[in-house]
Image (cartoon, rainbow, N blue to C red; front, side, top):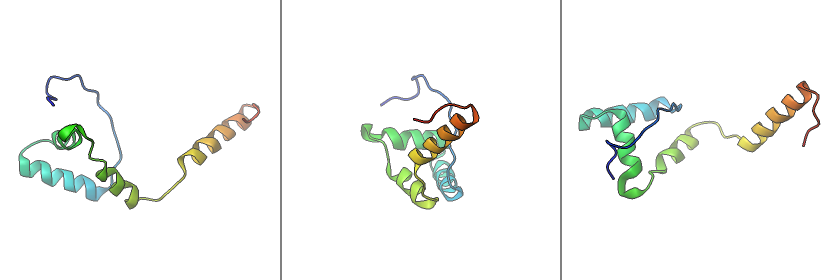
Length: 85
């Protein structure tokens, strides 16, 4: 898949320091940018390299995202006097 001519957007994600170092070393080894390395790995054979996300998930604290969203919603509802769902 050709990525050079495709429309792109800029995004920001937080990754562990060790993973950034891994990408940075691989980019230097291949004489490419970190963005090029990540994009190439994600679209290789039209499949996303989800393993890296598994590594990130395993490296940080675990939490229930749905519960966090519900708690935030409930706090906002209390703040503005709305009934919770």
